[in-house]
Structure formats: structure tokens, C-alpha cells
Length: 258
Ligand code: ARG
Ligand code: ZN
Ligand code: CA
Image (cartoon, rainbow, N blue to C red; front, side, top):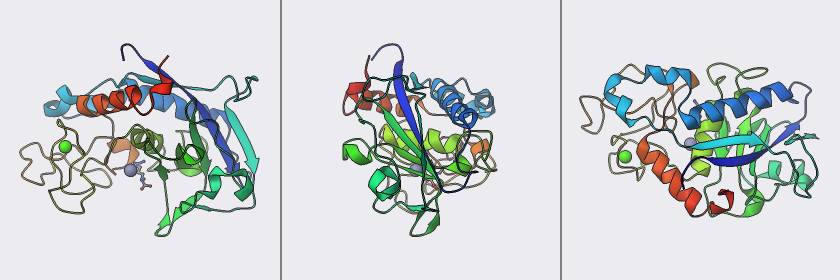
């Protein structure tokens, strides 16, 4: 595609406590983060080490809260659902179904669905998870913990800069984790050519360089959104990742092209 793709977003706030019923301002702060990060206008892109700066890409995707609902009526692009579920398991995706205490998806060929609540996996708490392109429409979209959503309100450090949604929407546009999801080995790939081969995920705020898989002297691209570092330590997508997302928007998610 040429120019910029505009993605209508619906945020389904599902709350069992008043604190979880996050403000419109917190929702809007997340949309603003997505727009900065996907256009590479985030100020912290200046922290990319100079050797990696040529890799920084404008992904040419913008997001806005939907202004019309699936029936064509005006909407804020935010749904609010009171539930008795204190924490939603990833398994089975109950948050994505009104009948299971959550909220049904809006048509996933026209909206990016984002559900926000307390969520967990079998391993414990969870910041977020996504469905890759090609899956069932009823469960398509991303789920983000209310305490990791946006950069104001209940967002809590070190995941309080909105980067969980940046990461999960990357998956929604078919990006894989930058280390290739093969544990600590060097055989796994993210199927992107310009990201250095990397052994495993990084956490926290790593010091540059972090070398693995013979990727010295510059090492891992741990400041990429598709690693697992803290929100303050991730601030870029690469040209290769932007191309992979563009291919998705010309392929499996072409219904979003203007
Ligand atoms: N799926 C990952 C998790 O839940 C998301 C990691 C997001 N990282 C971040 N810095 N916000 O662990
Ligand atoms: Zn991930
Ligand atoms: Ca790679």
C-alpha cells in the first residue's frame, strides 16, 4: 500500500472493580501511543543506539477509536461491560464472549478489537496476548491487562508506557517474537531479514550491547517492540518488520485498506 493505513479500533473495557473501569483518557492515551510507535514519532526513538538507527522504520499504520458501530450508529469506540469475573484466563478466551462474562467481538474485518481487563495464563499473570491473522473472527484481536494499558490512570510501572499493546498489535499484524521463539537456541527465526539473529528474550532494561548467537559486535536488537524488555526500554520496529506488517495489510488483513 502507499501512504498510511487507518485502523478503526474498538476497546472493550470489561471490569469487576471500579478501578478496572478505566477512564476514556486512559483509553485515548493508548491510541496515542500506538500512533506514535507505528509512525516512529515516539520521542524515545532517539535512544536507539546509533548503529541500529538505520533500521528504524515508520510502519505507516494509524489507529483511531471507531466512530460508527457495527450497525452504523455513532459510537465512542469504547464498550463498557460489568462482569463478575475477577481475572480472565487466556485459555478459551471467555473475555471475547458476552455469554462468558466478556464482550463479543465487533466484525474483525472492519475493527481491531482490544479487550482490557485482568487476564492470566496457566503460568500466572499476563500483560497481553494476541491472535495472529487467519484465525476465527470471533476471537480476533488483542487482549491487554488494564494495568498495562495506555500511559496514564491505572497503568503501572514498568509496563506503563503502552508498549504491551504496541507489541500485541505487532502480533496481530503477523510479527513474531524477535528471538524466533525457539527457547535459548539460535535456530529460530522471526522471518525478518534485518533483525539480528537472537538467542532468547530480554527482560528489564538491558545494557547495550547484549551479544548472543554470534551477533556481535552490536548484538541483540533488544530495544525492538517484539522483545520482552520493559516499556521504557523498547522503542522501534525495523524496515523488515514494517514490510512484514504491510504484507499482512495487503493480504490477510486487506479489508482494512482504504
Ligand atoms: N505477551 C507478553 C507478556 O504478556 C507481552 C510483553 C509486553 N512487553 C512489554 N514491555 N509491555 O508477557
Ligand atoms: Zn508476544
Ligand atoms: Ca531475524
